[in-house]
Image (tube, rainbow, N blue to C red; front, side, top):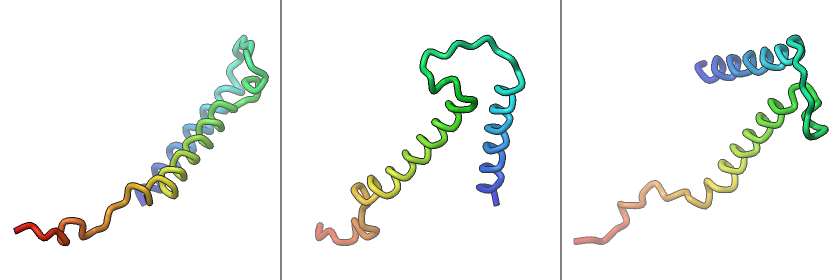
Length: 77
């Protein structure tokens, strides 16, 4: 339940950020053409975060994973 509240909170904050960007007029001259899109930086950051999580979970985790019984197999006397 706590995870759902956290996701909902960040979703609402992201939506409010984009809404604020639409409502509040700013004299903004984008350097790159893609910065002219409303909410591009927020969406780019969210997609980048999801990609980082997927890479860490599905690619890096199997590489660094250890056996649960790593210390039980030692034959030290």
